[in-house]
Image (cartoon, rainbow, N blue to C red; front, side, top):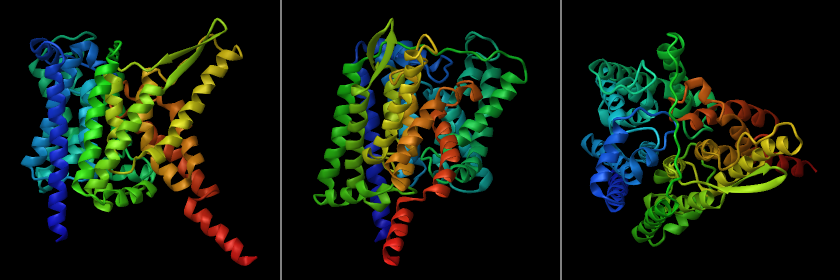
Length: 461
């Protein structure tokens, strides 16, 4: 019976992800001229790109949506062909891959790592479906593959070459084979408090590759971050439909699903798979509502700066990177992230944003280094949400502190990997958890531990 339920849940998850992928393709075809959309998608796939390059500007909104949809359908096809068991981790792997389809990864650059994951499965003599999530997480280093394919070792893009293909395949095979082992150790680094478990693994591995390809050889690290003005209306309309449809689908699957959703809401998000613990219907409701919550934040958030003594506010631009951030933030919606535990991290980001503002106000510097609507911070928050278990286990204020630390670190971490690691914020979340969690455990304890101590003291009186 339990086995049958697992199979049924897996099919439901795969169907949901497939429909979302098709929604991207349909949206792409509706956005402007179809020929221009196809050309834009091709331009994206034949260009090197680092974290963060705005695919809306590079290949148009339609081209970026199409690239994302193709990546999503590829992920779903591989899951189906390998008969992989779909669960909360699969949802995370899917959303991370499609998320970077608008600002850092293409259909072409994902393949070296998929091949690497397949070779790993042959070496270990296991089915590819049992390790396919690791292959999907390995695509965090996709910008390296793009650089090898179309630019390296030159500063400007030179076009496709045989040696570039060989280099990208070799990199993908190596990364695909070592990532599972690194991810296995990554949890020891952050004690399970970084939902983006592959972040530290990918970050440290990217640092090694950067040193081998660039730093040690003396080859200049290229930079091609290029941001446009975005398309707020189209992105909002798309995600409102998708997230609302998820919540509605959950309601239609089970009329009593809100009972399980209430339990999910009370969960601390620590080492939990919502699909297994609370069921697919409740998880879909959570995914839909959490997605709308994320969208609300990106629409409401404003950055503030001081210019000539006057306070100015700026809204977030819905660029390809912003759209990708929404999807990446949504990635662990089935495995630990929800509004209740992510909200404290948002508050931490806001409080941290007062630091550069205060430096301007008191004359320490002339201009703010960043605001909440700086692109790096919009993307950074999406991965800071991976610290949700800290808020869940240690309480609201611990989540606020975690968010603030992440905000102060996230823009400086790319120096370690040269912008070639897509999981920059997940890497930063791992560092934050590594520093903060032992302190919280030593001096404060979890909410349950503090509650037990209070009960003990009460009993003694």
